[in-house]
Amino acid sequence: ELDYIATVYNGINTGDFTYNSSPKDYLLYFGRIHPDKGTYEAIQIAKQSGKKLIISGLIQDRNYFNMKVKSFINDKDIIYVGNSGPAKRNKLLGEAAALLHPICFDEPFGLSVAEAMLCGTPVIAFNRGSMPELIKDKETGFLVSSIDEATENIKNIPSISRKKCRTLALSKFTKEKMTSDYLKLYKKILNIT
Image: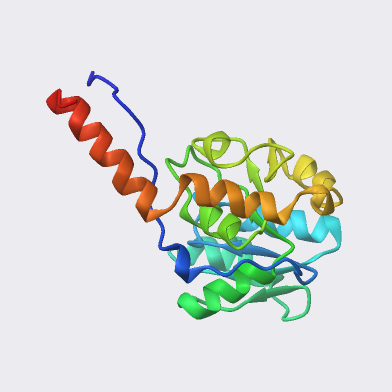
């Protein structure tokens, strides 16, 4: 019932994320281990595409982890590395061929998506919530609607320009951009020219 005025995206300290033009050959799941975030779906995408998957994140739902994730972890093609601090996060995101973000809810932002793109890493995400605002389909990643569609697009990852991922993220998700957008918004609300 509130009047919509503008969207201001989260601002990220870009100095924490290093551009990497030469990724390694693995997929990354980075986020809470919870049914909403699609950890199981990421595993299925990796399995179906024959790619190694590194999983990094807090186990928020222990039952989900035990029932849907744990049995796939083998330290060969499905690897769980636990939570990752800033340095490890930067390395994992930057060296990944792509970030898998198969969310099962209408996520309002998706911080790891913006962070991955700051490193130059394309994102394959389920087309829900804010994903179309963060990802330019077929330019900085792929917006898909199923595990099969995600799997099919794994082979298309090399068609994505990592430089373009970085450029888009720098244009939309910096702390400087966020600050500027909030100031513009406040001036608009207060009717200041």
